[in-house]
Amino acid sequence: MDVRVDWIDRFMGLSSLDQKLRDRLITQSQVITVPKGTILFGPGKNPENLLLLLEGTVRVQQTSEGGREMVLYRVHAGESCVLTTACMLAYEDYSAEGIAETEVQAAAIPRRVFDDLVATSKSFRTFVFSAYSRRITDLFHVIEEIAFQKVDIRLAQKLVELSDEHATLKATHAQLAAELGTAREVISRQLQEFQRRGWVATARGEVKLLDIDALKSLSESI
Picture 1 (cartoon, rainbow, N blue to C red):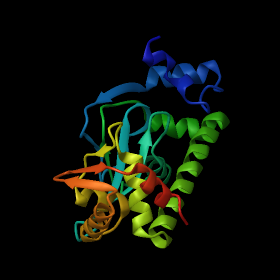
Picture 2: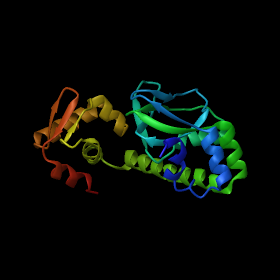
Picture 3: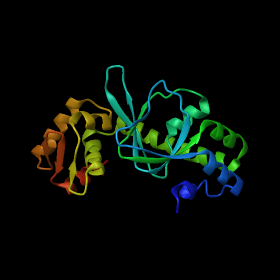
Picture 4: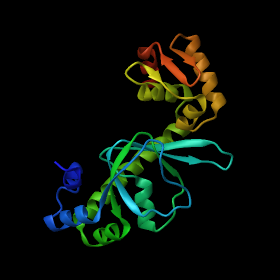
């Protein structure tokens, strides 16, 4: 089936819309495809569309005045971006950056359509705020991890989470630091300790997981 027609059914909260609203979303929204590495939005820019991801992953990150990057969350297929939703509801500019980690396909709902449906459609409003609530909960979890969880546990979790089918992760120490909201030096020291234990092997821009069971055991510890 043509993705331009069936994308609404990929989102549970939208499938309950009546046919008139479904037709409006299909005709007044646009399915877009952007290549990997595209900056979808950034600080100071005003959102023009609500993007509902159909394929791919978007990384949302913030950069401090000192230049340190921190990954806030990722948006995957079947999800929307909580920051975009917040900015559209509050009529504010973005405060963070969204980057396509892969090629991304998304349904773009224009602001005028978003504003009207939020005001007039209970089903659409419920969909927007339910997704918003779930992502806010995820953000609180990120804050809790940064504030209270030890770096070694968080790094082990991230290595297991982001490694590919060959137990390899293509990432620099700086990129891993951004994932965990810490300094590159902290990540370097912790990777050296993991390597000393025989859990990983590091090379330039790459981490090879040698003992996934040990990393998983640490990542699941409290």
